[in-house]
Image (tube, rainbow, N blue to C red; front, side, top):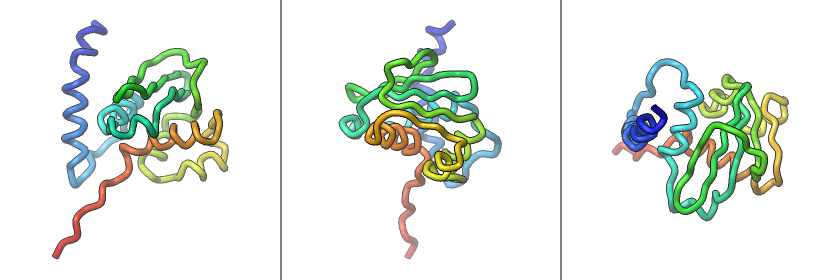
Length: 142
């Protein structure tokens, strides 16, 4: 079954890219799988040199590892002992970060997000996580 699900990933990523162009966001809350898929859908291979590394996301009781290398980002569930940087939060806080309801700095300062790794690796993790959720500038209307 995992092979069949993995085979659908390119289609889901394309739907995500298409949906991200919508002027109005859909109603409802995003789950962890949707949040992590959005990272893959929005990943720009031109940014690989700036984001290269491995990053752990400890969300509630689950751990995910994102690896950026070779013009791609791969994300999997499972152990992430050798990650360059790690983020720990609950799903509600992650949604708030991605929805720009709270900044990473404010979340870390308040203790609802914990990060580890050197400063550069933490910056890369933040850039990787939040890039898909940064609204694209809209052209000015005449």
